[in-house]
Length: 334
Image (cartoon, rainbow, N blue to C red; front, side, top):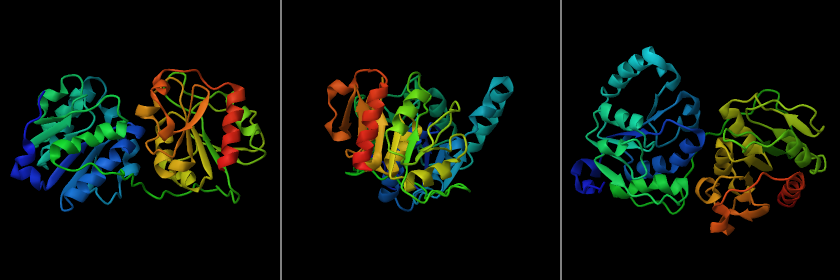
């Protein structure tokens, strides 16, 4: 679908109400933060509301570019009764009547949300699926090999806004959980992930922790509980809120994570102190955005800026010796 010349529409030169649709997931929400910052810089007087799942509201509430979040309670919309509830919920979107709706989710459901809002203009990305683009007034062309952050920033092209040279990931300060009393420098390890084969095993966690010379390793995230861990591992998994996780990441001396939403959170907060472990995923597309972040892939440790086309291909999970190698790199950078 060809883009329409909407950048010459007087309404879109100064929209007053902007609806941003990106309900999930954690990593995707973090990737969308630079879009909000750019919109706010271009149109500081505009009211921007973000349609988002309740689980991720803490990531964006309080953002200087945000006016309000609109909760999308997806779990309440399952089944026949849920479908009826979703229709009633969708009707509430129209009461605000945005000038502009930006669909960054790119699915039929999100495009329908934009349509139900009654927005005068709806813009989306060329990689949208399920016929979502049929509802768009204009489509921004996306290079599917680009990093996910750059793909989302492409939406600015059809709005007449220059892409930022350095995307801004503005996140809350967070708050440490009660009882988190570590006074010495520590390393954070996030071993969990939703994708098949992305999680680190207990054996990998043990090999990593034992190689850190008794430096405290704070285990975080949500997944299967691990037992019999080395004495330098402080297990805070299953125990932190999102804001507490942010505070722990901010205080950490270094962060190692599987390819996951928390990895993107860590990389946004501490780019040079984050190392992402990639097995089959493409780190050039879904790895850390900042060039100074570290990536493990194919048995090699590289800075993000050193990655090449050969690093896109699927690979194997780290061996126990490679987990020890990762720990040695952390000791150098710690």
